[in-house]
Image (cartoon, rainbow, N blue to C red; front, side, top):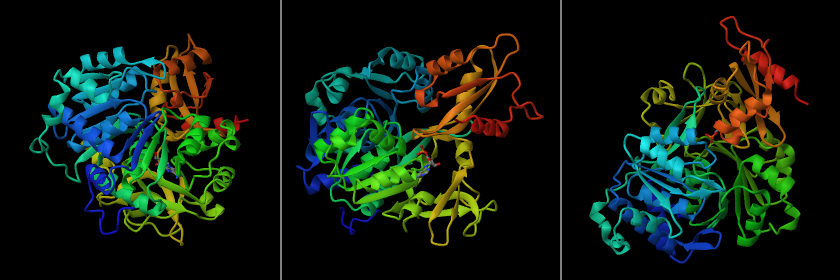
Length: 528
Ligand code: AMP
């Protein structure tokens, strides 16, 4: 653990974390992916080389670097190298459609796009090159070939690898400030337009150091199989492990049995996932076939876990914990660690002393204990705002500067917070946020659809899934399969509604909008 003397303000940038642990022990293991293994010494060298190459490629402080790779060592090195030259790293999700990728790339305007040509059988070269060609800034596009990340970039900017070592003398590097943005993480509001939350170095380091201290593991070893465009992958797992001087074991994508095999093989000590992933690991992964005795901490986050699931997790590790936070808060803002079952079920624990978290009233004041209000946070570690969206940024805060989470909750007299539903309509499917308006807009683009509403319904496996109600155009109503297929061609799978009801007599509000509340009730009544 980083000694208390190295306070949150002393190690307040991501490269400072890497430098600290490399200085402690260069031979300690930092990352694994398939047969690749990197010590802290190896990782620092790879980061140094790639950051020199980035500078040689013209990447400057504040430029965006977009990366499309699975959770892997390439992800880790690209993230650390980008932020160590003061540029802003952006993760892309291979599950996203060409349209979704184009939206994010065109919004962030990266100067460089690094991508793996094929991920899970999908080829990306044409899509990424096409997007880059139509982007006004014409980003440099680099396909990562078999020769690796650095070599691929070097080949592209056509200078010999030897130059890389000297390409960036220390004076070429602008220093990185704790309040500089390190990442852009795209997230959507109720309007469905994804917005890029700017995540500062200080937020990543502070939240991760606090998490490392609270979970209390010496050099933790964690499984990381979350998509790289999610804060969970970059912040809650990777930077947390870096803050504790530990090792990240990457897995290309979540796979219920493969994850268990990695826990056994690498003696993983920290297992952090969303509840749906744990449930799938137990239901489909044959947990009894693997030795999971190395596990010391299990953490769920992103959605509530059922009593049954919590009981199973408790049987697997000496310490279990429920962490609550969101992209914009950077890390978790409340912690429930080693609590009785009822507390785990009812609450998300309480904020650590370093965080300012309140339940806010409609008058921009703290609500009384027991009263429902919006959970809000203040302090230097949360997002800096939304990329190029001053209006949305202003709307994200109360007049007195509290960041609004959009989650409703109440503070109990014991200081713990109970979640009480969503202020917004966003729902969670398998750990992902689904923004109904985005899906509705897609449905409304389908031939024969006049209007659509998507509401969440409870689901054993995914926690919530979408049920779409579609008002057809009078003459050429599509069938349910056509609508589903259309969504599948436009949206990532977790956004596609699992049920579609086409009905010309859907309940309407007087102003001509579909009645979302009535449809939510109808969907719940139709649940088996
Ligand atoms: P994201 O920005 O994708 O990380 O999603 C954040 C949202 O997930 C929060 O606003 C909450 O609504 C929900 N969430 C996060 N952690 C928890 C948790 N431990 N229990 C219940 N819901 C959670």
